[in-house]
Length: 193
Image 1: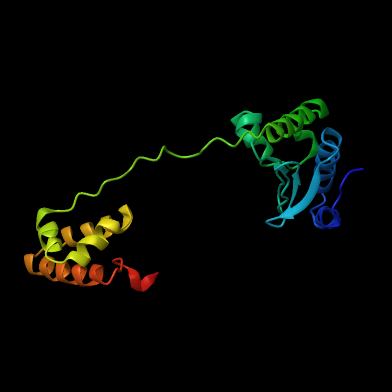
Image 2: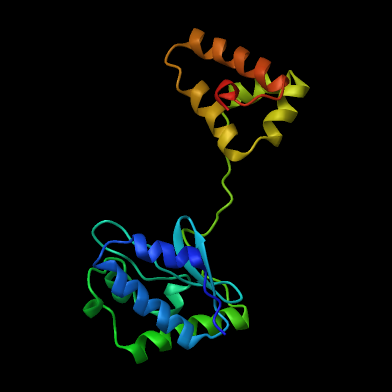
């Protein structure tokens, strides 16, 4: 017996008239492709889960979307773009194609396949501090230890702030302030955190 959530029924009922047939059709096909699917609301939209998220179907004022959670592994980029701005049932693919995509999503969840990592590969960033700053840091062991333990972004904030001074006296004043704050274990912008 399909697991239906009354909140999803209410969501579909509240949706715009153009979205209701789209959402009903997707819901019907998801339940047909995966009888053990569970419905829920996440981020205010219907989500269909089975051993992880399969599909989300958010509806907006002018369009609704069909979002395969592991879309990169299921459909092409062009198809994913088309599914993001649906305004009529005719924009959906045929039942066989859509059920095949849903079954692929189920298969990926059953086998434990994860979404591919997005973004750039993480490269360990090193921050190069100027010699005059390092010399001043070596005079205060607490400040030096704090600086070495800071994340690259906090180190970079200090280095850029000090190196950005135009006048020598400003740079020296900033170094003194930085050493005082680092000795206390504080990042440069600690007041705003």
